[in-house]
Length: 430
Image (cartoon, rainbow, N blue to C red):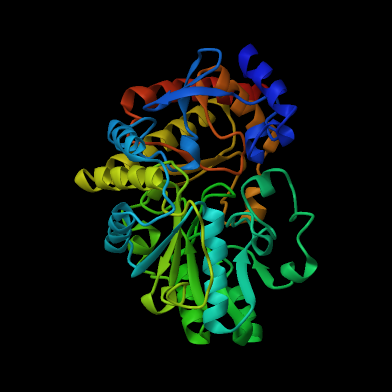
């Protein structure tokens, strides 16, 4: 587990940070022990305060598609820092990044940059409500769209990891404006629209969920979302904060052929720095202030350091699209998990899409949050601990995605495969 220096750092942090962390899943509550404190990262590895070098399968929960400290990103941020870190005024880099987003993302005709995925989802929902004059929003159990009040109901990510049904402090009236359905449940979706379709402002969905572990939306599910929202005049919002640019340059909407009305982006679009966006049809985005009456603002929106990192990342991806190589790396990791689990006699179901995957420690398919929660959480904790001891850092929760980057080459993946043998042996002994 964590070394002496990380444990000491955690105890110090607990005196001034709630739970010792700034995001709940980092506290290791689901796996036991205390968190690894990171000193630096390079390529596919991180180094902790005790000097241990660990293969990183967290990748900052998705944005580090090029690995840690990629030279192009580092140089872009360094150059911009020398010119100024923040202005609160327009810069050309914002326009250049928006032009790239519009070029790559099928739904994007106009873009508004914000600082987090929470802001992007919150703003997209506000825009959808304003455009339709309706209030009801539909989401799916296990879908995590940030921590805005109306989207925390039956959420994924740390909400699911910690078993929190919502959050104190969210007014019941807010929750009443959110309808929650099971992911991939087309009949329930059709029934809700038949009953309340004229009241639905928007449906927000991760087309490939990454916050209850990786769960892929079926073609039938995505097609039904597009058909029903169009038929009833609701706004379809794809949350591609995780999947945008990772599962292809145009995200899931490009590969699926299902184009939403609005899209939320984050993580990769800012190159790992705090930057996100909501984008979509020009007639909708034209209603955002100052062009229209729907207010949203942010002092740090389009921050120069973040836009520099985002531009460097997207340009690198465009120069040499890595998605076929990333898919192959993901497939190799999936195969290594299956082989190690089979050798140890441990049941596992691996859900994978491209370079993101989750090994669910259970038998049978995982198509929604209830099936994801059927995994053996105690067994995952043993797997996590054994992998960490063997020099590999996966996410500290069964209900999160594992990621690989362009820096996870064959040598790194071979190390992970060896560690997985030890990891699943520990699960079997437990």
